[in-house]
Image (cartoon, rainbow, N blue to C red; front, side, top):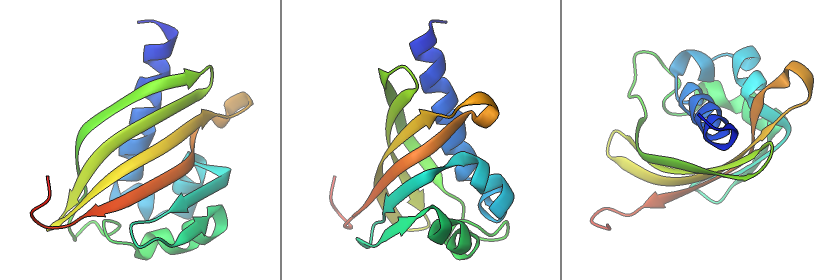
Length: 128
C-alpha cells in the first residue's frame, strides 16, 4: 500500500469512528478525532467550532447507543497533499439522508489524523 492510500484509509477510519455512538458521546474520544481548529457547517447551515461541537456532540442524533445509527455509503477520499485528505460520502440516519465533505489533517507527533473541516448538506426526499 502506498503512502497516499494509507493516508486516505486512516482518514476514513477516523470518519467512521466519529459515527460510533460511543465515540460521539465521549468528549475525550471525540476530542482526539477533531482538530483544535475544527469548523463545521452543518446541514442546517449552522457553523460550529471545536469547543461547541465537543459540548453538543453527545446530544446530536446518532450519539445514543439505543437510537438510530449513521449508515454511511459511497465513502471515498483523495490525498490533497502530505498530511491532508478530503473525504466525501453520504449517510442515512433514520429517514434523513445527508451528503458530507470533510478535510482531515495529520497532527504533529502522536496526534494522528483529525477532522479539520466538515460540511453537511441534507438531501431533500425524492432527490437523487
